Amino acid sequence: MDIIIVGGGQVGSYVGRRLLDSGNRVKIIEHREHVMAALRNIFPEEVLVYGDGADPRIMEKAGISRTDVLAVVTGADEINLVASTIAKFEFGVDKVIARVNNPKNEWLYTFEMGVDVKVSQADLLSNIIIDQIDMENITTLMRLNKGDASIIELTIKSGSKVENIALKDLHIPKTTVLIAIQRASENIVARGETVLEVGDHILAYTNSAETREVYQLFN
Picture 1 (tube, rainbow, N blue to C red):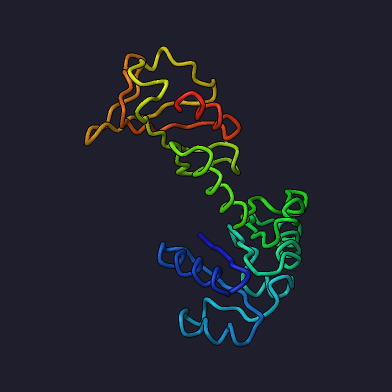
Picture 2 (cartoon, helix red, strand yellow; picture 1 turned 120 degrees about the vertical axis):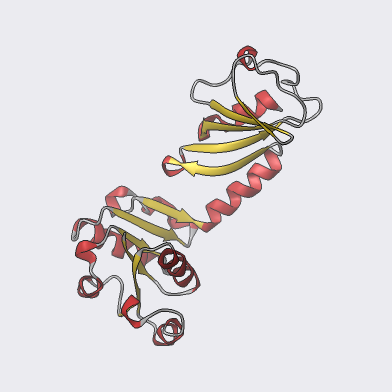
């Protein structure tokens, strides 16, 4: 896959290294001379493009016309948004991923601005903290569909309302699917007649809006 990364700082260089190691074709655009000098110690010269990542001419130099994914990860939201808009509407890039630095600017990162996926470190961190504080027996393993759905792990603790209850007798939200149960070293397919026990770890798919309802059920 052809991927362009705008921004060669700590985030951009880390993502670039991971993508290269995964067999992707990567270009990193960076305009700061001292950062570019550091990148030359890490990446082959053909990976690096010196210049402004929001400049269409620099994007063309990096091969934007054949790019599958553009990841804009600079520390400046205005650059991230301008680069996203140009990439999506001038060059027709299929997938544009943009980093949100200031949470107050998150509302600007929309499809109308050319952003397919927004990544907010503050939002990710707050979700993790809230999940751990409010729903201690649920771990969010993965967010899907731009955060609208999740793969979660539920742990059945002593005193849980579902202890010794068969799955078929639970009033599970319609969009929630129980996938599998891990009991000690045994993996069990989730079936209607399966009776839950303390210590069970349940893998489930759920609509993110219903996560709290699931928590209330299994708490």
